[in-house]
Image 1: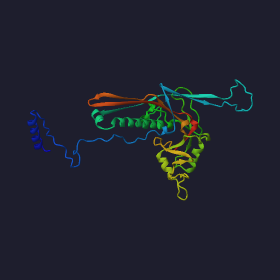
Image 2: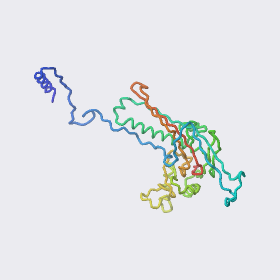
Image 3: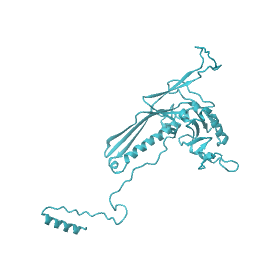
Image 4: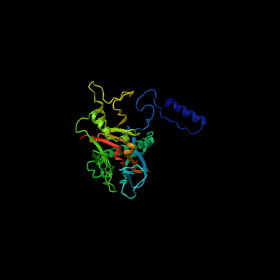
Length: 338
């Protein structure tokens, strides 16, 4: 119906009804064409964000819920059996043997925070925006915690401020490299519990097949068959291993029986997990992660909307607290580039 027809129709209705009639002269959208601005208002699809890396350490690490401001780890050390001869019914009380003891270390809880300003008009217009923001923020926290778990120095941290420094987690890089694993000093100071991890040196040269076997051999055999034993490697190291070939040009790490023929999906029976957060200094870890690494999450995570912090905006504030530590240094080994 055009404008003239609308006016005539309105006049007829006014005469017939004898009252006031409102005539809407707004023209309908031209639905015969296509393009921006034709056919109505903009429709917003569900909001989303590009997938973040998350935290690969959580794939196998021991995860617990904690409370309070500090988390203390306790390990039994030594042997309960008589090391001279444990057989027989006799025992000698109060002799100082067996050599049982405990090692303790205590780490303060660390906090991750984020704040995000959001236009209130956008919240009502874009479908699913609030859910997408919360989901992405959770993954962003996972990304930040993984980076801190890998490389952060909680002792000085002058070179790792982006991963928290003295306010961040105790990164794997700062544990002591040694020929044999050992517990760190026992106590409640922040300098305690810096364990030694059995480390195989790559000698500053390209990795070889024999070096990979040396890394595997360094892991004590009691951890070989446990579920959760896996390699963590940088994507660059995985690519390097994929390029290792025998004299006939075939990949050295093509697992027999792998249906998809994927090289370096599995090495010596243990799955390989790509971990982009590991540093080039320590590009390979092999561990039973449930025994090796503990992640303690504080029971509450706070997400709050702050109303009208700026005209037309609300601010989403989020806070998460956690701590992580190598729990059993004997349950993991690593390779150093140097």
